[in-house]
Amino acid sequence: MHSKKLLPLFLLLMLIGANLWAQDIHFTQYYMSPMTLNPAMAGKFEGTVRIGGIYRDQWSSFINNPYRTPSAWVDAPIIRGFRKRDWIGVGFMLYQDKAGSVGLSHGAGKIGAAYHLALDRKGNAVLSIGGHYGGEQRKVDVNALRFTDGYLNATSPGGYGTSMDEGRVIGDAKYNDIDLGVVLSSRLNKKMDFNLGFSIYHLTKPNYSLVGGGSTGPGPATGGIAKLPQRMVVHGQFNVELTDVWTFSPNFLFQTMSGNDEIVVQGMLGYLFNKEKDITLYFGPGYRLSDAVNVLLGMKYKNLRVGLAYDINTSSLHNVSNYRGGFELAANYIIKIYKPAVVRPKVLCPRF
Image (cartoon, rainbow, N blue to C red; front, side, top):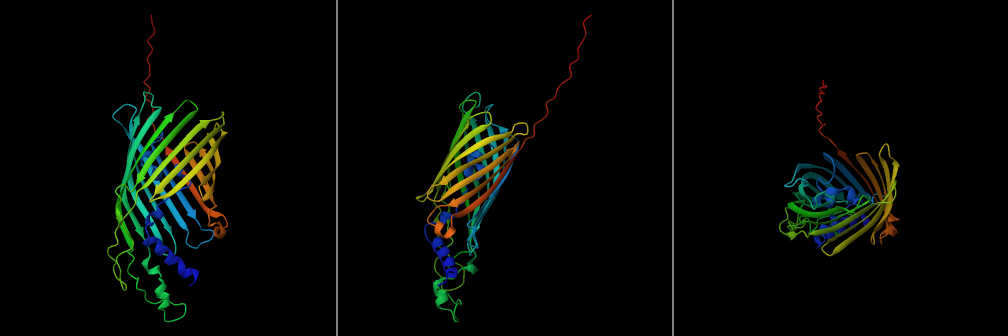
């Protein structure tokens, strides 16, 4: 059988198997995508509104239908909490992931909220607790699916006939989902701070399946309901000011889902390029264990931050990929709108 015929069949086998979750989105620049990293990150910044987006393109260098994942979000700290140094943040995010010759896609729109609890009087240590709720959808183009017996039943060489599996695949599956997260952040002194977070996705293990009960021809598929397994994420970042112009920010990510683990470690150096214009350049390496080396670049200009990442594939696929992985482009901007202070004029009365 030709490779073009094997690819759709391979994708179908992935759908039928237990690893339906495998297309859960992930980014190399995970701290540049706070709303997909941890729900507790909503409103966790100094400013009025934060808007951002990230785009990932993977395997486009050697396949015709690569993974393409755009995501956008907006969040804001909206009101003060129950205590003076507490606050509440809200956010909204969208993402869409699509890949393969049969258009396997995963999209979602979620709203979130987080409560940021100050643990000391000065607000140097903050515990953030948040959650997401929204709808998700996974789709596949059933008209593009091809099965082995369809080629065997073809009336002409290289053609495609009728398959007993036609109608088994459901075109799309929709479900509601809940995510929860917690982040502890603390300023240790004037030059050092850190954050450590934990999040859990698919909390209620919603029912979901793209494969139904059997069929002998075209028609709606039924049954085949399975529970989506939970995905758990642990992440952390440490920031230290080395000199007046140099900073160092090592970070890590660990996530697991249905026994499949991902571990990423990174180290970003920051260089204050222009103090007057508030321009800082960032660069550093990263490594996703048994998968890819990350090359990371970025820049901060006042309230705008942009980042670029490229993955050099080092897994067993490197014989096919020729070490070419994927790239990401990310940006976020913090809008600061402060009410100007009202200064009342003082009238000086001379003494006589």
